[in-house]
Amino acid sequence: MANIIVAFSKQEDGRNIRNILVKNGMQVAVSCACGAQVLANADDLQSGIVVCGFRFGDMTCCELGRQLSDAFEVLVIASPAKWSGEDMGRLVCLPTPFKMCDLVSTVRMLEEAQSRRRRERRRQPLKRGEEERAAIERAKQLLMRRNHMTEPQAHKYLQKCSMDTGRGMTEAAEMILRLYG
Image 1: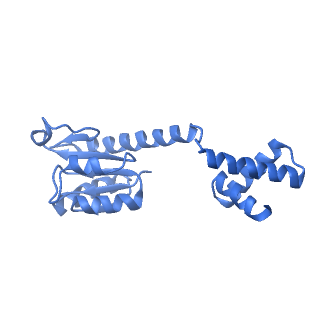
Image 2: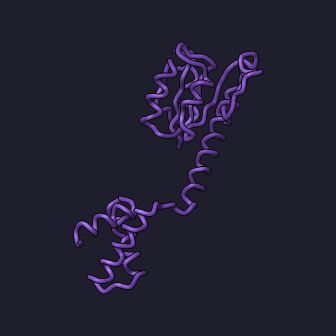
Image 3: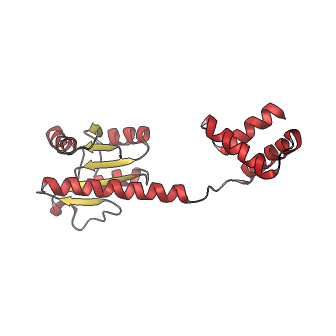
């Protein structure tokens, strides 16, 4: 489930949108009244969906969208008169007036798109830098020499250490190098 930030300059609008989402089984992480609050909370959450109005006291939704990381989707709820002619970039717009089911289905669609992107990123092989590869290789060589392991056994041992400690493979390799090296 995605982290949802509801952000409207009018608190009543934000409360109404939040209530609709919560009523439909979605968890709203935080409600904000300005763009700066959204950005601060986005740093803490790291990914999610921002459901917002067109303009805040400190910035527009377009400016907010440019400052948010690509890990966030932005759903703008506003009159088409406000955003027509604007370059909305990657922002998704829901015209007012809207039906509750349109809001809910749009947020669910954005959640699914985020989930799909996360799955695709996990499937891609991890790209390690030269230093990281060298540390892993040194740790495997050390395990092979010290514990008489084959290369596949040393690799599997490193993977298990990584999983058991909840750290990356490079960190596990560095830990082994510090312990045995």
